[in-house]
Image (cartoon, rainbow, N blue to C red):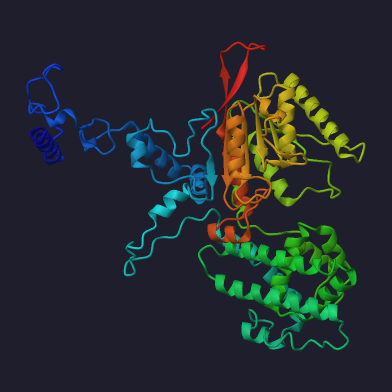
Length: 567
């Protein structure tokens, strides 16, 4: 026993000492040992029979000297194409900002057959999920953090990431309210300063609040004014901190959205009382300094696109002072600025292959506001560049929820049948937001469609959690792509993963980091990522290209079946 153990230790020592970098390149010529003569303690068994050749000895390996790997060549060609094509370069920068594009992994280059890290063996039809604006693996991020990391404080700082927009044009749009404020307050500037650029910050901000007479104010007016001044002070400090930064237009946009949300909450506490809001608007227009008035106009401009009725009621009857007119103010408030929208409109998304028709399923009766929100209009415009969109509009015949749902279901089915009859060779895809995504899944079980796109799919309904054993959605056989928010209140990643395991159709999942149920990123998340909501929506639209329609040769009831590959 002792002799066999010493002989095994000697063999292991031989294996360890002979594992040099060049030992696998040349295999020593040793006599072959038949299976009958070989045993555990055989000294004629060479170490090269156990070891795998090193990567540098394999022809075609990316790490081999002088290698001409096809993958490396294609990767370099794609990089060169991105540098030459402005649209490809813009798409590459957009993927880099959302965390989808990174340097090639050397392990995946050597082992292209390896499965993704989030592959689940119990559900082979559920494709690995894609993630936007979030770390690839929380486990990896925790393990990679080390306290012994070397920090270079003497070298040159790393170059900032490329911008997705024209900085000069974005700064002009960003300072639009400031330019208009200078002309509106020209009568309040000293005559010797009218021909100059503008007074200094110290002169224009000096004691403007103390000059307001508060005699006769009620307690509600004093509390509301104090809250608004606190909000404007915080916004002023934020603007000074972000001045002349690398990505100032985007971070300024996030700051304005955050300040607008606080201002909206302050007015909601007084129930948007017309007398209080109009009084507040008149006081602020008359006494605010130029810098504070710029921030206030940015707030009104942002809220006008979200709650136009309340802002119109607040502004219409109180703009009577000599510095600004109602018409000029309304013209300024109708144009909310976004630094990335011009670039996103210029670099349009590429069309989907196969002349895809996307039927947009409504999530309820039409809103009382005649015009759709600005974000929805931008999302639909981006979607129209990728495929032919067919919106479904209804006129509710009853106020009951069940009757409205039945009407939406029948209208969507009729529109699907119409599209299939007019374009028999084009794939039909259903797209829905929220409850509209659930309706799209139910329609796909009644009518044959190519795929479903579920944006903000809710996992909780009136009858409880979806995906249970008696849920009829488990019988859905249509390929489906789910897009959810990481911080959504009505859905979690684990719940959708469990639903995908039980579904028998091919499914994909896209998780937007830090997003809510409507796929909106918080102001803090947008500030950290350096993006706007329009950039986030463009990344979501670009990921809809995961749906590649392919024709199958299998015989079905219609002698033709369409499958969707989620890559």
